[in-house]
Image (cartoon, rainbow, N blue to C red; front, side, top):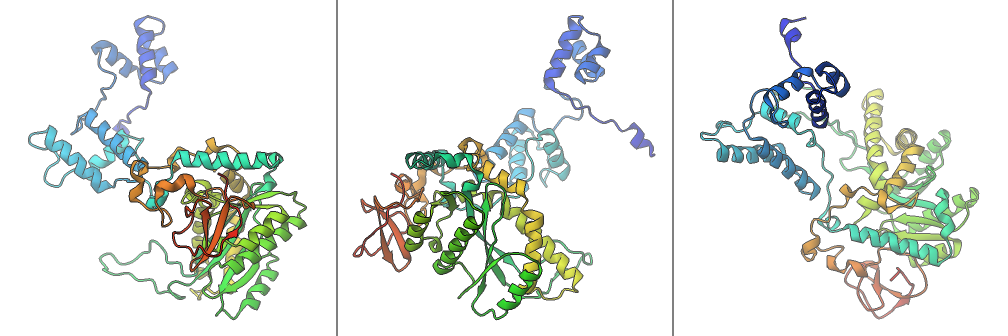
Length: 474
């Protein structure tokens, strides 16, 4: 072992409160310094030094930092506050701010012409462990307007509707709560990091499939941890659907397949999948009613389907607008790990098959592995719990997911083509009953409007042919 490794001193980690207790016990002759060290896990040299010099507990041994302790605390709090508001800062932002403090506090500045060094940044994070490096999630301005009050109202009206309609028994049944959501799996995965010659200016990865070739898949998760057979949507131009179905049969996996013009969800394909969902519930002898939560995608707005679901005991509930990053368990806890698993499985497939082109038939095999390895029973249960759906407890939602940074001036940021200040009038709990709201047809499909004429989804509607459908709870 090298000499400098033997003599290298490792700074002890101790709590300031324990240091205070240790000093107090030694001063009052309750314990000796050695026994205080053992009891409070504080080095006896530290206890002795503070007693001898009656030093400030905030003083730390070692080289003095360039910025004062107070300035560094302000920087750390600033970074944390910005992240909470949805405006996180980067390394460069921290270096610029630190350099400004340096120019203000020190004459001449100590950082020098190049500003804070990598060594200073490393030391800053060691001195302030509450600040760390994270990868931010992209969040639209409309989603940032959602506040704690909006979420509380959603849960309050959901609870009131269930109680008023005599369905309170569902709160004890995990098999009564479901979440439906679509996601897309890219058939052309490119490694994020590769090895190449040092100094090579451009490194390429040749695509084996079309650049934006992907497959839309719809999942339904149950609060008891089950994943219902997914719906896989192919483009109408895809001519090998029978081969895909055969591959699924070989794997003894159950899927529902359909084809649409562009491979995306449509009202017709969504209608078919919900009716298959009803068949699955019957096959499993699930009691009715059940609640199926989902977002307000236009393909989900289908009057005939909603009325049919009401008769069969399926309560379709749309999440509060722009709040799926808070309320939808599929977004919160499932699709992130699933996408990571998909990337891993597809790259492994290419390595094992000499970079052969990944096709829709291979898709079934890989998707089966992703479901098996990345959609675990406990993860699904935890997803429903952390979003407050089941067990029903809105307090389970972590406040970090609710930003509400534009709450004081929401009119600057439109939500779904409407003023964000109209949130109180929105159909954020969309249970279909035959009263209160009207629905009008327009070029964008069905547009929901309150009886007072305030539009709930979209702004343009043809008001000449009203259809009473009843949506929402006022």
